[in-house]
Amino acid sequence: MALWPQDKDFGASITFDFDAEEVWIGENPENANRPGVLSQGAYGPRVGVPLILDLLAKHDVKATFFICGKDALRHPDSVRAILARGHEVAHHGHSHTNPTTLSPEAERAELYDGLAVLRDLGAEITGYRSPSWEFTDQTLDLLQEAGFKYSSNLLNDIRPYRFESHDLIEVPVSWILDDAAHFWFANDTWEKTIRSTREVLEVWQPEIDGIAALGGHVMLTLHPMISGRPSRLAMLEKIIVGLKGAGAWIGTVRQTAELLDEDSPTGTLSAAQAPTSLPANLIPEHKDERLLGVARGALAGRTGRA
Image (cartoon, rainbow, N blue to C red; front, side, top):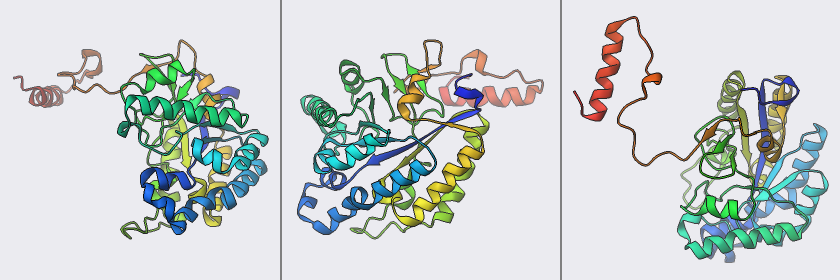
């Protein structure tokens, strides 16, 4: 589809989940009394964010920072600095709590409480990323009710699309391009090793190249407490330089969502019940009848039909 401005072949967004202390407290309230644990999150606003802002300015790139309300209350100057540099601030919950663990009333309060904090700091909020990349059956209703324009939570495409059921844009994410999946070290279990930047680049670059070749959208999901470390900032700089060299259009998630119009593709959440057969127009016409028979047999086996 013709989507990317300036005749660019593919798009990209650099995003940061500003998970400071709240990511540890939201997952386990007992961590509120563990300064060593909390200091991991505190590295983000103390060191990571200033370094990240300087790097983005060096390459004239605008990013999106998804921020929890409670972290914004702890670090209002960081939020103001992000806004002052021209970056987008978006919603990441109030506490860092999976919405599926909350009552409907608590989920509503989380959304509106976080929204109020971010707006009080001067942010114009149009986007939402769940702390867990997960929804309840009322999340999209709440987002639409509160005037959000986009979500960035689902993993079912490499292109942004319009929801069929709600007046919202989805700008998909992926675990493969999330730094936490590769770098997060859990010192409570010692079961996750710390990967080198070389290893992660070897994972990221082919994925970026593949998305670029398909004209899709590269969504990098980073965390200041993780990718704000010096070695990983150097890796991020390589990625940014590479994206620019490959001819990417780089914009915030809000700017990406705003590119879609009513003629853009639609999509929806996956159906709970799988279809019993493929639509006829998705079954290729094979000149080789043997291959066609194999395809038909596979479908029959899935659906229980002869």
